[in-house]
Image (cartoon, rainbow, N blue to C red; front, side, top):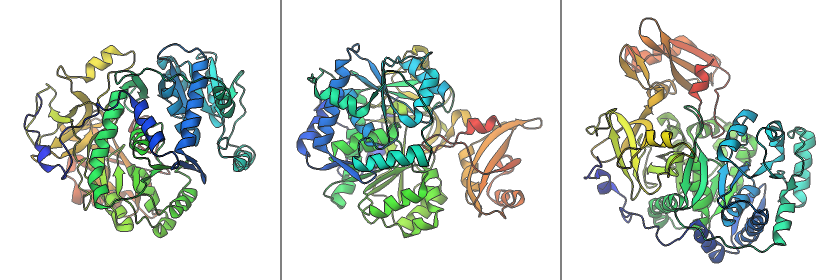
Length: 558
C-alpha cells in the first residue's frame, strides 16, 4: 500500500534528510537532562513577568518527581494534570515523567461529566489541579476518587507578586468558586516534601508510555491515545529537522516560543513545551489568550518571539483587534497554523499585517501530532498542509482501503515513528483506525498532488451529502469567510426532504449591517448550486474547544 515513489522527498528543503534518527536517546528523560546540563542559566519559562531558568526547572521538577515517588504509586501509574499555561504545568509534566509515571493531560475547562470520564478511563492515581477548577473535581470525587490531589493557584510559583495575583483572581474577579477537597496538598508543599526525599532516576525506555493524550472528542467519546517516549522523541526531532533551514537562514541566540495554545493540547505540548526544551528555548506562557487586551500587551513586550503556533480562530480574532496593528514581531521565524483548517483570507491578512506567512501543518493526537507541515521558508500561504516530515509516509485511500490517484479525494492515512501505540483500553477502536500494514486512518479527507503536497478537504464525518453530491464544509466556510462583514463562520449539514441534506451556515458578524441576502448573493458567484447554504443563522459566537477549534457537533444539536 505504501507509496514507493514518496513524491514529497524531491521537494524537501535543502538540508532536511528523508529519515529521522532518534536512537540517541533511551527516553525523553535523557533529552530533558541534556537541556538542564547545557542551558542551566538560560530562562526556560516566563509567566506574568516571572522567569524560571533551566536550573530551577531541573530542581523543581526533580522535587516533584521525588514527591510522587514517595507516594508509593504502582509502576506505570497515571498522573492527571488539569492546568492552564502556568509555570506549574511544565514542572508537573516533567516531574511526572522523571518519576517514571505517565502524564494524563486534562482540559481545565472540562465539565464534571467529562472529567469523571477521563479520570475513570485513565485510572489516574494522582491529580494536579488549579484551584479555579477544584470545585469540578469536588463534584465527582465520590464517583471518581483520587487518593492524592495537589491543588495549586495562579500565583503560587511567582513570589510576592503571586499573592497579589491570587487576591485579584479570588476576590476581585471571583474566578475561584468555593471548593472542598479533603487531604489535598498545595503545589509548593509537594515540592517541599519532595526536597526531603531522594529522587531515584527511573529506568525508562523508548517503548514506555509517556502520555495518555485524550482526543478532542469532536466526533464522539474522547479516547486516550497511548504516546510512547519514542513517539514524542521522534516527533520533536522531526519538527526540529523541519525548522533547521529557517534557523540557518536567520540564526538566533535563544529561540523564543509563544505558548498561546494550551500546553495540555498535543500541538503546544510537542511544538512548544518539549521542542522548546530540546532547543534550550524560552517559553512565553499565555494563561488566557482570550483576554486579548492582556495578550496584545504581552506581544508588544516580546518583539523577540520566533515561533508562534496558533489556530485559525486565534489569528483571525487578533487581526480583528485594532490594537494588534501596532504589534511588531520582526523576529518571527515561523508562524505555524494547525489544529483546524487555516482559511486563506485569514492567512493572507496575517502576512499583510505581520510580514510573516503562515506555514500550515497537520497532525492529530494520535500522531504526536506533526505528520505534515509546510516549510518555514515559504513566501506565502499555500492552502496545503505541506509535506510529510522525515520518516513519515502519507497515502490517500478510498473506502475499500485502496490508494487513489493523485488529485482524487480519499482518507489521509499516516505511517511513521510518531504514530501512537493505540487507544488506552480500547483494542477494538485501535483496530478500526489502523490498516493491516500500520497506517493510521485519520478520518480526514484530503487530496495529494504529484509533488507530494496534501490538501485537507474535510473531516470524513463532517461531509455533507446533497442530492448525492459531496459538500465539504471547509470549502463553503472558506467562501463565506471572504464576505465583507463576516467575523467567523461554521457550516454543517441538516436533514432536507428534497436533497437528503442541505447546507446550514452559522455566522458571527463583524458588521451589524451584514444580511443573509448579501451572503447568499456572494455564494452564488463562488459556489455551485448544491454547495450554497440553504439556511443562514447569525449568532453572537460559535461553540469552540479550548484550543479554538469550532465544534460543529454542538451546532448540530441547536
